[in-house]
Amino acid sequence: MTKYDKFLVGFLLVFSVALFVVLNINNVNSQDKYVSIQLDGKEIKQITLPIDDYKYKLDTKYGHNLIHIVGDKVSIDESDCPDKLCILKGQIDKTGDVIVCLPNKVVVEIKSKNKTKDDIDVVNY
Image (tube, rainbow, N blue to C red):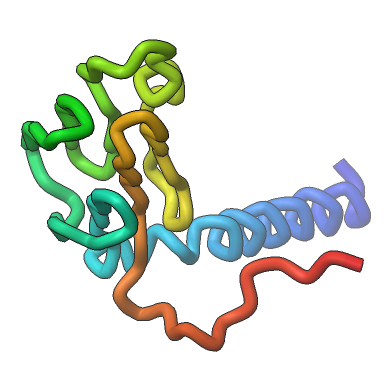
């Protein structure tokens, strides 16, 4: 192994560690995440993440939903809506992810407490 091979291996190790840290920096503040459950545009419940195993039954005049939270993952396990798209969405676990049950007017969103209103999410041209 030459001197340049050792330099290349060292550079790749440092680069991969730096890339890992940059990509996972959002997970450091995982205590700041919470689930916002909204009904007809109004927030009715906030649940701080992570949580071991929690089921929230939501029975309204629009319908029935069962929201299941395990750790940082949130899903809708039961719904009486006709198309069941909210169940097919599966689990969400990142800040900004959303599950919507349109017939039942339910929105389940993962939010972060340390984000301000003025933060820019995306810029399109």
